[in-house]
Image (cartoon, rainbow, N blue to C red):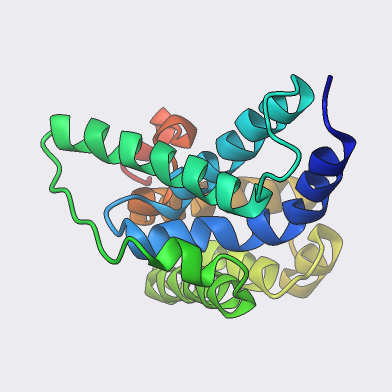
Length: 190
């Protein structure tokens, strides 16, 4: 029989854990991509949630600590996979996960870095319509607004955006989950 108190605490921990967990793992395990860390955090929550549902957690369980430990173990598993694959294993401060789990600054910093990476690659794109399309899209404009601003048809907008996104995927491939990379992104942009 599941303990309702544990389940309630687990649900209350969800937003903070999901928001900060990937960035905390990324700081501790620098060779893992942010996407891999996000996957580990999601998997950790699912596993702990199943344990709670099955009544396998004691009523006095510190759910945040349990979530952090589970996420860290999953990240270690990912490191081991990388190490077997020939990648270098780099582990930083193991206490970081405990110390920063609820730190909103970590989340904000990670999002800021992602935005910087994307903006830098957009600026490095060759001058032209593709660059204009993704630049306007990154500023929050809708398709209708972008098409109007550039004076192009919606079909042309979609083609330009598809080619620009493929270009950006190639350039940012190291920051995209392995299973989410599209094979077409590996071809040269025409």
